[in-house]
Length: 435
Image 1 (spheres, rainbow, N blue to C red):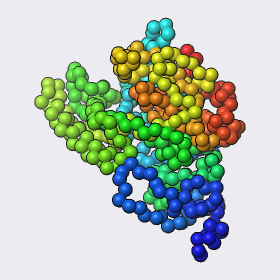
Image 2 (cartoon, rainbow, N blue to C red; image 1 turned 60 degrees about the vertical axis):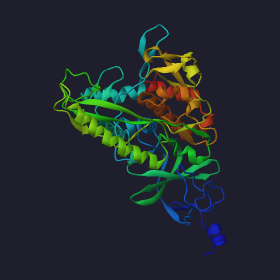
Image 3 (cartoon, one colour; image 1 turned 90 degrees about the vertical axis):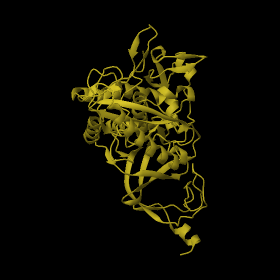
Image 4 (cartoon, rainbow, N blue to C red; image 1 turned 120 degrees about the vertical axis):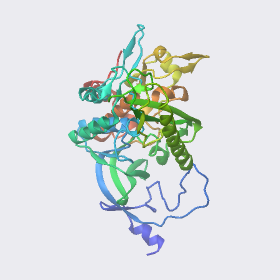
């Protein structure tokens, strides 16, 4: 069959789809060059082929970190069918696989001068379950046992009827006009596709919106690592105490201004950091109270802080967060997690006001059936340290999941969301919208 006949006869059916031609399909792997963050040594044309559609759901969540888990559970609780795709073998993203166990940004400075909890909703629920198991430590900005967190998240997927596919990577999207029709996956079953009415990009790196044509910027940052050691005596001041006798969490800031989308760079840092973690743990044995120290766990995921950041319908700014701006389309709050520079001086986390997140910050400018959650939603560089934290990811994830469900059942376009309806759902899910 020649190319003209192929283009005429091929269409997306219930069992297969073609990546070549198809008129309204925006992404054509045979003719469109893939953008890469590493130097190209030439190009290869991928032959046209049919790809099996292995699932069709109302909401597809790409990424199983804190944002993705919150999005999947929240969407499912709205009564729609949900599938979650995760590239590793566990849920939790950097929270578990990267051993970034502290749930930061749960508190901020209230206008009355008190250090106040501002993140509730899904974050409260999952941390509460971990406290009940004795696997969370410190009520303010709790640290959790990563294995217990994996277990609880798996339970929540089962309880809410979310289909989870592990060990698969979203590599491409197929568009129908301006809407996502299918997401292409690479996995041990080969290259397959999932059709969805709405998609939540919780990949952390904007893997979906970078392929839909929605605008974004790439933000380099430090890439470090966290690891667990055991055998530390209770009296020793070292790292962060975690559940388990003598267990501490240690942190390596790593190298600054790194490209987290460069596979060669990430591989180099993963190898380098693993060596450093081993050597530093051995060095601890010369310290009083640490003679029995041993390396308990190195992270399966390196500590990438930011890569792609969405140019959303509305970008939240550091200035807005510091001056207490409030939004009619609020989806939740976040707090302070680190000392940051602001107007020529350093602001400690306990000086950081509670700040609000608008719905527009999780909505792309172009694609009507796409929501964005996690460390790649719309924020400016000054707000990075709080916007990427675990608690904030829970907030944006929960809202994105609810909004995706409403996009399927009511609004049809994320940009035309019924904000009152979304906020009503969030309130029922114990999200704090006013303070």
